[in-house]
Image (cartoon, rainbow, N blue to C red):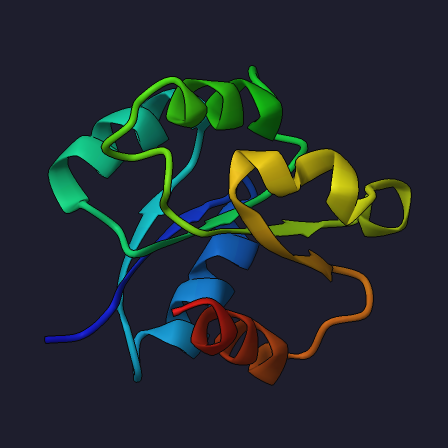
Length: 120
């Protein structure tokens, strides 16, 4: 059975690129907002979440706080994928279950696969 990856990204084009890169090796579901991600987490039961920080409506931190409040989903490894990577310290987000931070402006497609592989 393939590892399940939930991509939470409000940029439709980028979400589709992430899905295209990951779907060869993983079962992938895309959520376009923090609100829809909550329902998708309950239905899809992801093994890993790739999360954009700046989402329309709510930031990733709203979702991270929600995840942390539930013992059954609070341990899902999180990969932040953001243009704000240089502004975020791992020590500030690791308690949310964040295992990796990827800089969107510097990453290449293989980086996403490597990040998922490193946390599963």
